[in-house]
Image 1: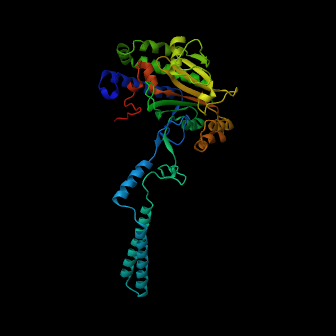
Image 2: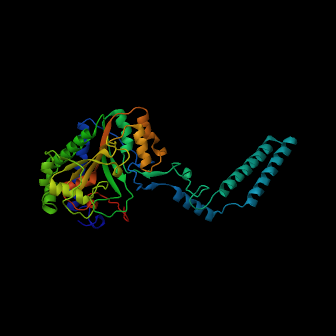
Image 3: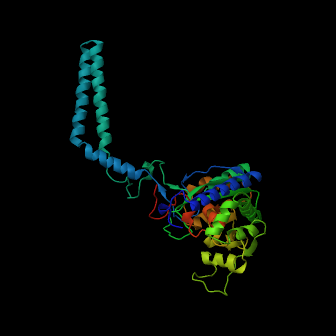
Length: 411
């Protein structure tokens, strides 16, 4: 399939994918509603990095402020110190004039007019002094760092990489919840599996452990596959005819067959382009090898080394692994990433520090543990990856209406 800007949105291909995407969204809301989840809208603008990777788009008005200031100073240069002093002298003159009129018992009308002129003189000095403080460029502190306190939110802000941290607050109050919305990664990647803007489905389950999390993930993916087979058969048959002959055959067993559970361990009998050893995350080729060559079905890999996963994932008793899981599927690799969350305050605080992150932006998240918490777990499903898995399309840019990736943000 060609790049989106070269393709007519009225084509049969895009129409089929749009309908499949719509049905998957409908099925998502139906599944969680039927299972007692509450839909929560989490913020797109955030001050915290959920994944700790630092690959976030910054939200700031400092550049537009600097451009506006530069334009203003070109059109109306900042006043000199002599201009400000002259304006202050005028204030004294206007004040003296008011005093003289009062002493001479002038009419109220004349005194009022003189007072108005005095106020105008004072306002003019205030405006001149304010303009004298205008400086071109990004505002900075004395140490040369950027003065984010002058930004719109008075601090650093970013486009969210995940709504998970925020939706946890509702899980601790309302039990099962989920969020479904756009997320953003400033990762300079041009692979067929990555976008700068994509959609995530992120449920959070109170009073749940890792096993509960895996059970929910399995049921959700099965539900999506069955929904497509029941409600989108014509479009799925179109994809089989034109793009992937095995698309329906792939969905049918997934919709009803339990997934394989696999403890993370080293595969040594096959050579990969990417290194395989403890402490290094699985690459796409490793994931597809497990699902396409070994098991030929979705696989849930769990208990990852703590060094390669996010700070919020619960540390296991061995102090080496965390209660995390990934759902891997054929054609795509990782479809879902999830974990039991770290509910112990001291352990969570240390994990944040070990990740090299400042504590201050996460104080609200730590408060969820300080003021009573519950065991809880959750996961995130990449919505576009689910569409890739269902349709057999090769490039993730072809399953989202307006793809954003490095160097491209049209329309």
